[in-house]
Each structure stands twice: as structure tokens, then as C-alpha cells.
Length: 209
Image (cartoon, rainbow, N blue to C red; front, side, top):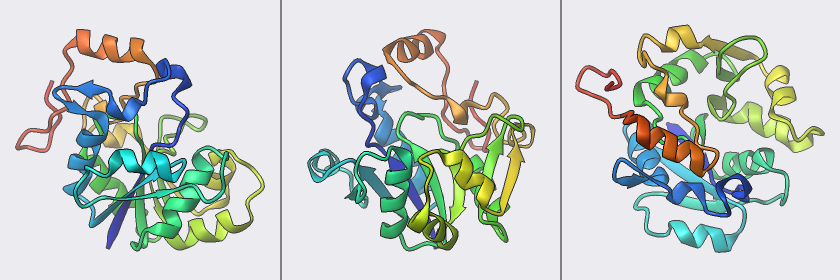
């Protein structure tokens, strides 16, 4: 069984106070685009919100469960902890809610790469990783998150038996690496809209230009 966790609990400070998951891109909200993509690859999807009130905003999403942080105010580590306890699959794809172009073929590639490891993390170089576009082994996460001291994801990655997947290998599936498109603020959204970039997937499994 494969699972996915979508982290939505950020305070949206860089997005002008607006929740990024309801930004619209190519006719769908970010969360709708991400959920539609993940349904192609995983058996269950859990959205992790900061509190039960925020969870209510996702009640319209069919076939998706929402849970909220158990340990409040810890950022992505807190969301990862709650999501890991909520899912059932041994391997979990973790994504941030501000990535509207996640490519199902890349997610599939990361699941395959994670077999026999605790994590499969996309890597641009030794210092630039994509921990919120990655696959983790559930049992390894639970063990780490029970007693972790750091709130940073980097020490967690270093402590795991991690397989680093180069972005050059990922280019074979997603030549323009659109899967890593990240929207931090309204200016980013306006920029991607103006560029007319598209992140649909055609019948060959490649990203459309």
C-alpha cells in the first residue's frame, strides 16, 4: 500500500495571508491539482492541517482524510508526525501544498527508488534537497519522530538510510523539472501565470511544454 501526506498547515504569511492551497492555477485550486495527481499513484491521501478548524476547509475533497497536528507549532516536522501516524502504507510520499505541478511519473520513480531505504529524496546537489517532495518509510519516520530534538528536516534526512535521487535522473521523466514548481507568494503565482507554463502530463508520461 502506498500513502501520501499533503502538508497544508502553514500560516500563509508569505502569501499575503491567503491560504496557498486555494490559489487557482490552470482552472483548479492547488489542492485539487495535487490530489488529482496523487490519486493516480497512491492508495490513500491524508491532508495534515494545523487544527480541526482548518481541516473543515477540506471536507469537500472526496476520498481524502484530514488530520491535524498533534504537536502544535512545530512546522513541517509536526505535520509529518501527525500524518505518519494517520496513514497505513509503509512508504509515504510527502508534499507541500504549494506545489501545483507535481508529476505522477516522478512520484512513481521516488516510490521505486525508496524500496530498501528509509527515504528517497530528490537532490539538486549535496546542500539543496527536496524533503517535501519525497518518499519516506513509515516505520523509520515513526522511530525518528518519537524522540527528535531538531525541528529541521535536514537532521532527520541525515539520520535515515536515505537514497538521494539526482534531478538529472528526474529530468528523464520531467525534462523541465516542473514537478518542483513552488509558489511562495502572490508574485510567484502571477509570474507562472504570465509565463504560460503548463504542467499537464500527456499520454507519453512527459510534461507538456
